[in-house]
Image (cartoon, each protein chain N blue to C red):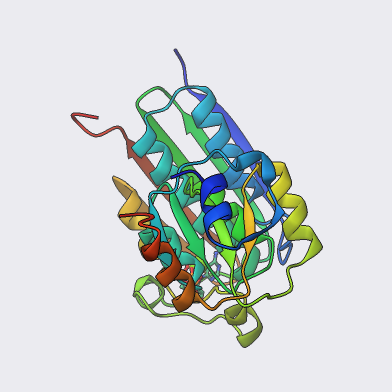
Length: 112
Length: 143
Ligand SMILES: Nc1ncnc2c1ncn2[C@@H]1O[C@H](COP(=O)(O)OP(=O)(O)OP(=O)(O)O)[C@@H](O)[C@H]1O
Ligand SMILES: [Mg+2]
């Protein structure tokens, strides 16, 4: 399913990187240790993380992830939004926590 | 076709630009049509090398030599060097400060990620002089 369609099904706010909404989501990955993510996440993953600094855009881009989702309405730095736009990496935000987000994904059969 | 070489300058503590060298290298590889799983391995290895130079060193360079089937990466910094390389290579070992850990670095996985991604990996370090990492990655049979 495309990032665009997932944004419509689950209430996710688009913060930046709107030019990447056609990317295909192949699964979810949740972790906040960047070099752990680097070695375990794969292409197409939607990545849920509480890290909000601009380096997350480099990580997601290098791994060809489909989007980044920031949970629990966390504040995101301006620099991160700028990088997300440059790299066309969708940066989304939800009021829900990671666990409830996963439940939503499963309810909609996303990433199965 | 002969190998093309690029060198990137990496500044110490420059978190706003950290990741730009590895992102540029990945873009070059995609432009020359490099095989996707080789591109992925180079992306991971150069990212980890770049972040280590930003976080742990006084600054340095990353060079890549690209030819159609293999990519050679040379990461070189100006110190302070690594005292115990064997310990530094252990997964989970990190000297990252609390501030750096809060940003999600410091899992102690970077060096072992680099090694895992490489077909050949070597690291040399001298206290007071610096650290040099050489990695060679080639397209695998059947890819
Ligand atoms: N270029 C370097 N110069 C000096 N010390 C280094 C350098 N690279 C690594 N080290 C030392 O080796 C340790 C292990 O490095 P490694 O990349 O495996 O983990 P890390 O950088 O601490 O955490 P992570 O990479 O998981 O975010 C570092 O904590 C640091 O002490
Ligand atoms: Mg590291």
